[in-house]
Length: 292
Image 1 (tube, rainbow, N blue to C red):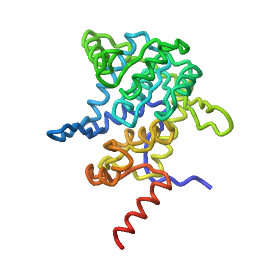
Image 2 (image 1 turned 135 degrees about the vertical axis):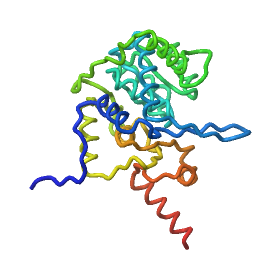
Image 3 (image 1 turned 135 degrees about the horizontal axis):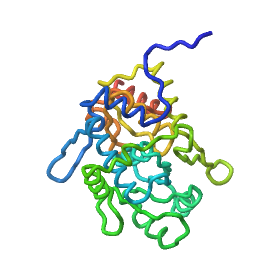
């Protein structure tokens, strides 16, 4: 029996093709809605699909200038815009992306970096002390430590992005012209270790791009939707789900934490999210309690 599909979507072989298609189709759609909060006010910042690709190309050009072309880069942080920026920058530049669990103890984090043979790591400020210790131990292959936040100890993502912007303006197109090898290693994903240490899964861009194309054929993703990215992005389900949002012209917001999900759903006007059964059941229970 022939498989039944309901929607039309091109078949892509890598993530670079997916993202460039989205930017061409939804250039002015909001890709990310970010929140900046201080004691005085809460401010929302919208990043369009066109602006997001510009950010990726600037950061990627900066990473290439550090000698990271063709290398492996780890990413560790809570779900936030810079996580997605780092992951997409890796993928669009043919850099192997290594998502790491933000809840790993220091010893397991160090072991994961050793096993993945990561050449660099991009992290948020929560991990600065751990990475100082890992650097001092000298057991990993890490050459570059890049903070998503302001720091005096390590290189900063924002400054690398700025240097990349200047290089692009001077005509440096090495990152822009990066050729993606569809079926070669693109990302190393650590699974939960059920019997011993975690297992490492090797995925190609072809694997992930075909997942996206297949999902697009049977699910009604709409460019007017708003997504809340609360599934852990270091899981394949979370990161591939986010790539599907970016393939669809959907806007993504990030939660303030699990306890604030109900509040964030209202705050951002969320119409779409990728979840797991337990989370859906809890939302259902709370709704029923309020009704009663």
